[in-house]
Image (cartoon, rainbow, N blue to C red; front, side):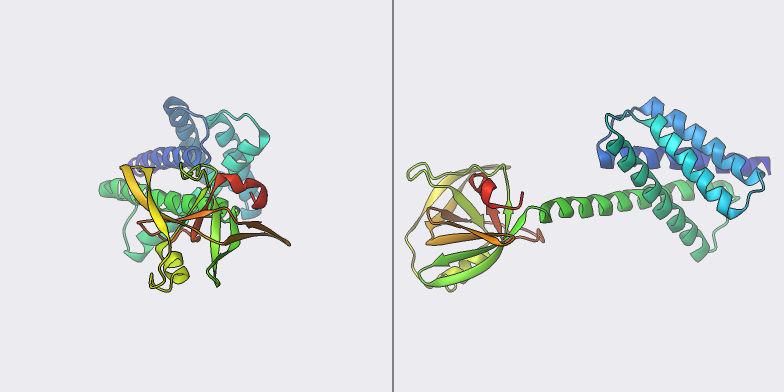
Length: 268
């Protein structure tokens, strides 16, 4: 039985460390290795002591939540109450997702928890699952932030009108150096629809742009109007260039990267 308790303690120390580490990675909180490790030992000791106390379920849950609140508080440095609350919620979310998943995997494959190799299996499963959970939560969080700055848009060119989703990118400061007009970047699908599959000839040119991999050329052409819908208002811009991206926006949820000049006319 003593050996089994050692296994449980080792598992809990490492799992608590992973939970705390990825909590602070998610919220971009301030912590440190030794602080996280010490709190992981405290968390493991608490988890080992809880079964020794005969408590009803309705009393055990508040006690666990209270201890997790103390653990998160001790593990990080918080400038505001809001940042602490977000960290507390994230920690318990990861704990819930991880605990149920690891238990489910071991039950599914009828794996014992009281063997030497079980320690490594639990840690491996916990590491993989927390990585997947972190990736999923981060993706949802980022998409939420992106959608908060996505506007319904409409582009008009030579009597043709195409509706699109536009994301306000405050980092997009791309201008055409000759005309000094702002450049809105669109997906190839939008350009395809505006030009009827590039069958309609439009006066355009290539401008130099800087990308993550170096310098590149982008096809740009002037459009008649860009309409940006902001709730019950519509903002119309008629001195805009449309640049065609070489690469797709890859499930981004938008078709246009709006210029930072349009901040006043967008949701953000």
